Length: 409
Ligand SMILES: Cc1ncc(COP(=O)(O)O)c(C=O)c1O
Image (cartoon, rainbow, N blue to C red; front, side):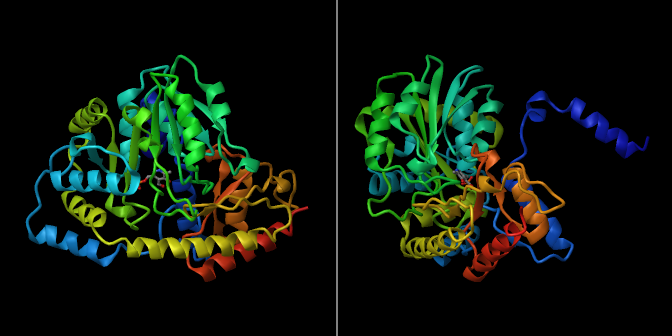
């Protein structure tokens, strides 16, 4: 046996159980496959990745350049620079009606890092985390890493993929520690209204050891008239809501990697303690850029959101013309999430499609459009299509999908 082959056999055995038990991120896996096909010369339209196709606004980039020139080259405080934590506290007051001091805020390396930190800080082995499905792929894996147990409750298609207060009530047990959701939602684009969140809050209020982990990373990409509502603004729950947000989506800053946790002091202190041993304070230059983002003009974000709303209308309109596709109308974020289960059991004569993984793989290999199977999001009948791409690419991608499914019998 060659040394390389020997190593590939040894590696899984010696990897820690917690890593062997972890699923690979399905969004990143699809994006990698799409890149490989593109490298082979295929004209791939990549709609699997969850990031804005816009550039970071100029005033934010300028702040980063200035930070380099001004010499912010050293370690930052573990919880973040004081001016950034103050900018975040101001932002929470202004946009979310949440009253936290800078000491309640911890800055991390993206909202993903913030979410993972909070779960590590609050979950003991066997503790339950109620997750509203469809959910972002990493939630259940973060819970697994903390040796917690995910309790998934499904939002029905007919309720715009949203979970109801009654469903939540039925899912809470004495082991429940966290209820976790994203609004606007990835992958469905669903937005929980103030009323819906007040009903959910009323259930949580009755269970004093249950905390809410509110993922608000798509806050600014919201197409509803009512706008965004933060569950953390409800006074009765103030100390039990952990709000996570960041700059990635609303300011087109995915690569800068800044997220934050806003929570009661003992939770913020726990996150800071963990971060102090694992990552230290996050990137100094990106923190200065994020400070400019939170303190700066919102026009660029508003313009981007207008473009996402227009593309949503375009893509959903075209997808609804495909026979068998059931498509909800996303109220935020930049995804379409059609139910494609009509095609399960059908075949193009060579390949049989049995589930959303088969569907998404088949689409990539036959029409060179990369999407993500809903299975990783807890919605096995659907596929996720990013609408963060140029109009022409979106139109061509949907046409390719339409032509491809016409061959399925
Ligand atoms: C629902 C949701 N939460 C959190 C994140 C992570 O955001 P960040 O890039 O700030 O880590 C994403 C990114 O795709 C997301 O979709």
